[in-house]
Length: 304
Ligand code: PSU
Ligand code: MN
Image 1: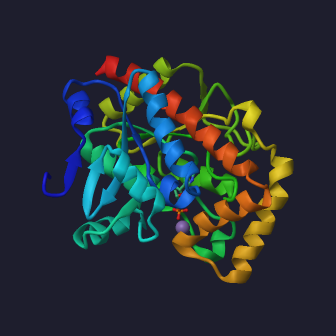
Image 2: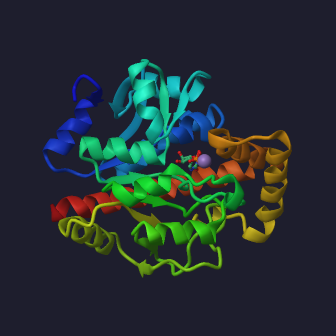
């Protein structure tokens, strides 16, 4: 594995000692947010994870090397360079063999976290079933990965640009528990509410850790989706953001934007249309998730 993967010494030490580690993704840095907010947010996430007593491991690919834990310079490259490829599961061998730079999506980050022995991963919002998927077939590889890889993903729900009811249906079929941290309702990324229910509300990091341990002890392979609503102060209520999302979706259709380009396009257009408010919301919700993920990782480390 050393041929392909470099684990940062601090992360390696924590993993060997059975200490709490939290994986963080890099697509959000390279394709989800503009510079310099992206790099600044990535650093803040790492600090937040540390302040809760866990070790952060931001995952990305540099010159074809899988990096579990990035240094300052590497974060800066992923945050600024145009040639950084958005890497989902299927892109991994191509980008690695060709020695390119890659920012990993939820699917690819889950896969690599598992390879490194990290069980807890924080992101913003997972990919899911796109609106109109009945004709476009656009369903994020994040869902299939959640169906098979033993990593818990802490997120603010699925991005509101998606078809949330269909996303929940897929997660059910794939055997992925969808848990609400302190909420009965499935959060909708920018908004705390979606009108949809989670499987189960769970109120403490300790109970969440126990569910993870139980699932994997039983050989129930696959991920767990832990949904954490955006903090109230940063929320954009669904009634306010929905028109903007509709506008952005229509533009994407007119421009013929498809495949891996659609999510970055929509996030950027929504940011422009809300004069940056959606970016602030995005930053605050990821920070909230990184904190919770660290708390869960600390509890999980106590059980293993
Ligand atoms: N959450 C964010 N911003 C993002 C993403 C998630 O707050 O940019 C990224 C994640 O990396 C996720 C990806 O895996 O969008 C989904 O892309 P797609 O729909 O093409 O699978
Ligand atoms: Mn897609």
